[in-house]
Image (tube, rainbow, N blue to C red):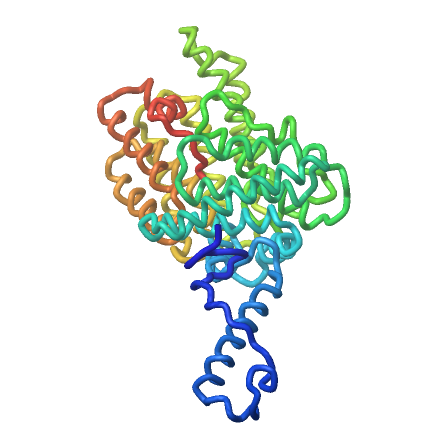
Length: 435
């Protein structure tokens, strides 16, 4: 029922004017029209103005589906000028969120709502869970899911894959640790693996890369989960252009080596759980040595002497740290101390307020899981705090919490628990992405 202070079609009604019937002066007055008192004319014109303003407000449709209020315009502006710049390497105007996703969202309701949900989640996490932002997040998330379901009933498309990936990012922004991202990531995998079209190659390259990056990163923190990239899911050769990547590791091949480490790690865990001795047999050792050689031979696709080249070297270093922590006993050694220090040195060379910050959480997490030496931990903690201050993404805090928990177990000499941080994450009740 409509009444005072009602909201309909995003138009705020401040109550209805009293019923007034307007007629020409010659019908309302037997005398001349100018005989009507000026105060009465003022009242009549005021009512007419209100009616005209109300009619105009209700007759204008929204320009873009999903962007229907002043808050929505603010959220879209926040996504364009802030959120989109903390999710990729790009610092300039060549941002794939601007180039690909915003034009799609202008004509796709589900994608636009997912972008606005992501924007409001980022604001809510950065502003003490402000109720207006939290309410907006819930509204746009529900609308995105509703529109996505309706669209999927007609068959999936690149638009739907983009929407599901943005919904993964929404869980990152608000710091969800319950695995809310997982069905969205799985849906994106199915959509992209079944998409054999060669149309709109730049968009597909971006979507493939974004999925694979999060898929591999997810396997680093999730118990007994092998990445679908590159075994079940691979980037088609015709879209491979490593130097144009929005992220690192996927198009340049480094994540192929990281995926092999994850598979090996899960095999070792199975033997450890069954108390099979040795946990690392000769076949696994042979695999590890081969992966080690591949990491040593890998070369970044980024231009030398560039910031991205340094970031790529950091990724290479932490991939090796991941391999060492998988194959070797979980305890301090000069070799792991040196490897972590080299990773921190690469990190020191990266500016703390540039696009490379967007890809630092995963390598920072892996360095943290290898910091047996307490002297290295304050710098790692400072980088976690700085990364959270820079991006405002909610998944950074739980990632730091896990690392600090591991440090306590390291100091207690618990080799079993410090080797298996995936199990520790599960025991803490966490399921989140380190991206």
